[in-house]
Length: 121
Figure 1 (cartoon, helix red, strand yellow):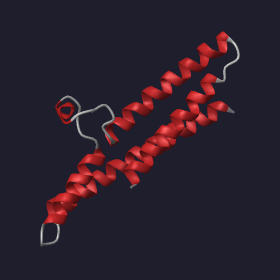
Figure 2: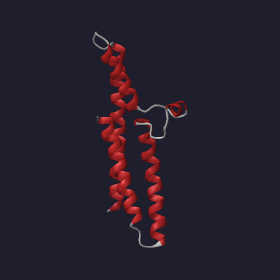
Figure 3: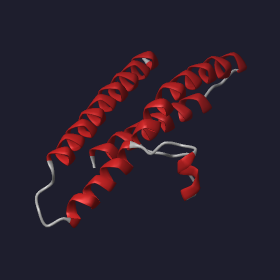
Figure 4: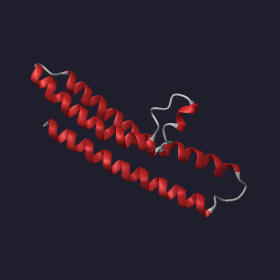
């Protein structure tokens, strides 16, 4: 859930920025806003790509594009639920590491969003 919350925040921030860029009144303003939007998207897409694989359209695409953290967490939960014993120490360690990565990405997204919002004032 937390992983997808971060992805939703990324997409909401991007949508807000796209709306802001579209509201330009002059060509100079459009150019300036387009440049800022492109820089924001560069930051957001690199963060989103680690959280979820948005480029893959078919199973075969996963050989070209790496799995995101969301897929790794889903696979881990699926495998852990199939056993009759508690999760292994390795599974717990992987869960902690993936959770740490999600928290790290959330912090980065919050910083990018705050920086972008501060620039709008």
